[in-house]
Amino acid sequence: MNVGTGAGVRLAPARALRHARDALGLTWRAAPVGTAADLGLAVLVGLIPVLAAWLTKLVLDRLVTGTGTGLVVLGMGLAGTAAAGAVLPHVRKYVEAERSRAVARMVRRRLYAALQRFVGLARLENPAFQDQLQVAQQTGHLGPAQLTGNVLATVQSVIGMTGFIGVLLVLNPWMAVLVLLAALPTLWIQLRLNRGRAAMLLRLEHFQRRDLFFSQLLIGIPAAKEIRLFGLGRFFGDRMLGELSGMHDTEHRLDRREMRAQVLLGLFGAAAAGTGIVYTIGVASDGRLKIGDLALFLAAVPGVQSALASLVGQIGAIHQALLLFDHYDAVVRAEPDLTLPAAPRPAPPLCAGIELRDVWFRYAEDHPWVLQGVNLHLPYGSTTALVGLNGAGKSTVVKLLCRFYDPERGSIHWDGVDLRDLDPVSLRSRLGAVFQDFMAYDLTAAENIAVGDLAAIEDRSRLRAAADDAGIGDRLDALPRGYDTLLTRIFFDHGDREDPQTGVVLSGGQWQRVALARSFLRAGCDLLILDEPSAGLDAEAEHDLHRRLRRLRQGRTSLLISHRLNAVREADVIVVLDGGRVVEQGGHDELMTVGGDYARLFDLQASGYREENAGVS
Image (cartoon, rainbow, N blue to C red; front, side, top):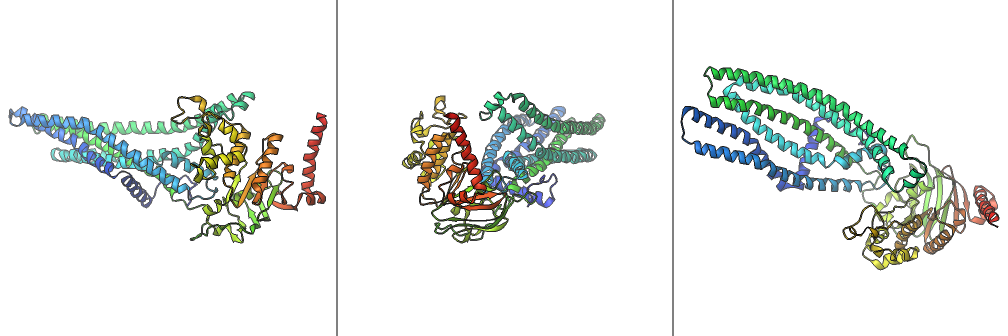
């Protein structure tokens, strides 16, 4: 399925019918009582104008002829009809809102459940899919709710139109034909306009994402220091206004087109109605129609036109809702991004080790190879260090070991079993990791550690032990609410709302230790991945961190990635990557003796430290 296209400004009839069936079915499952009640209210609201017009005709005829029989009953009927016309639309609005909220919850639940099928990162890192995902997330819930509302509004319009057309057929069949013919160009133009608006939504997604990016830069904390230091406010502000202007230009062109079309349609409809009304008044003046008939006709013509206009609008809105649902449906129906076996095997405890066999990988067919024939063995119970310049492929190896991607050629084996044959969830439960780009969640301190193993979220003793092992326990205990303190200033929970001092922002080094605590929480994992765990720390903090990591790695299989070669010298095996290939492999002393790339980089870093020390002395 191609989910990266403009997802169709035009829908094939079969696809549109399938979307309509799925969206209406989803609405019914989310709110069966509300949908049934809304249908009944739509029928009643559609009947009210016809009933009011007919009762008015009967009252006028009796008044003109002097027949007073039943006038009180008719008057009470008119009053009741007016009351229903005033009350029922509000009741229906409430029922519709309740139904829409239920649908929104179900749509979101299904969308996020579908995202869980993407066990890898390929789709999420695809810009075209991201555009469609954003549309699905922002407007997906509107599709079923809007479609159901439009269908029910169509039922209401059809009922009102049918009643008034019946009146016109009795009074003047040619007028009924004229009014119906006047709706055909309206229907055609409205459908074209809705296709254009649906297409605009996807085109605007790019502008909206860029606009959000620049606005977050300007109002957010992460970039505040550099923006003020380098004077970037006007630069990013102009960029943001440029994206906003692009959005507005696109909307302006469509709005102008719609205005011209609607003006022409309004004039056309008014001409048709005016012709009929003038003709009917002439017939009534000749005595061929009763006063009540004339009143009924004068109500029926605008009634039919109003119902037709509503019907045409609803048909166009249904088409637009189906187009919106198409994006949502494409995401929900998208196939998993990684091939999974019918009966995946659970990952067993690691006994022998992990092996990469002639692994080739690139992120897209038109991209260069990131890994080229990599052969690598991570023996059980040992520490393997992976070093190399930026872009050598180190982080890609981590993604493949976590099975976020599969090799394009070659394979990776867990105790001799290809990772493709293992259950990804089971595999990842045996991994622990501190990523270079670890997450700082806007949650409490306890929750920020517990995300490493949600089974421990209520086990405060485990969380404290992990924090102590990572060297952050004392800092978290000292927070205003201890481990229940929010580690953010963005928002507060209900208990903190009145006390802004309880939201705390940690330093970068403290956040690294929180991320490390997540790995200590997985003390029993089979493979520990440490990707630049000490980046950004001072020398003392780095020394303390690696002392704790040595204890964490003891007796466990681990992969250590670091640009600071002094941190990897104690690894059992050091592997040097260059251009996606393994160019050196061995212990620290062995590689220093060889005098290759590792020795050159190590000496380069060591000389820098020696120069710094000489300068200090």
